[in-house]
Image (cartoon, rainbow, N blue to C red):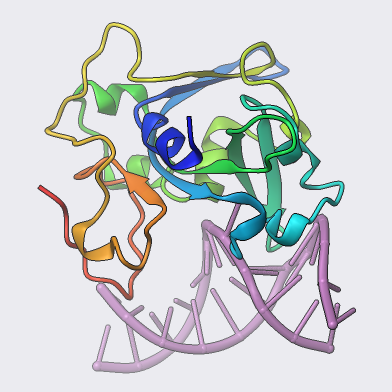
Length: 192
DNA sequence: CCAGAGATATGCT
DNA sequence: GCATATCTCTGGC
């Protein structure tokens, strides 16, 4: 699977984090962004960069790459390709599982998972998890919509904003989800 | 609602 | 020193 395809496939996936103290937090991925490796100027492995921070991206698919930006915000990525092909998908927003099945949440509750930094804080994800497998470690990823649930609310998985397609060609979101981020400079045109 | 500033890890020049 | 895959707070309209 290519990385752009993986970014689409991750929409609706369930992230479950078992914290050291025993608490368990989970949320559903509703916005992603693909980073296409050494040829992508926006990617941390652009031009073959291979520093300690980005080493997990050079490893096999299905592992976490977590980094810190601007000193305080952590961002969580899923490594998507085989060893030696450093590509990944950034998780830009998540919502509580109960929103996905139709519950109503307040603006603040939805906001808590909106944005890469807030998504990490909501789930308790830190840079200590960078490099961990997402299949066997404390942070696990169930691909596809959670078992037993269907995609609801008319969401079209894999479709981003029609008006932003040109500006954000590698960003994918569940249309209509209030947790999805919207750059203020762009018109909020939702695909139908 | 919008714009600006500050915090401050990591990597590059 | 400078830039960045960000967020929060503040002050103005």
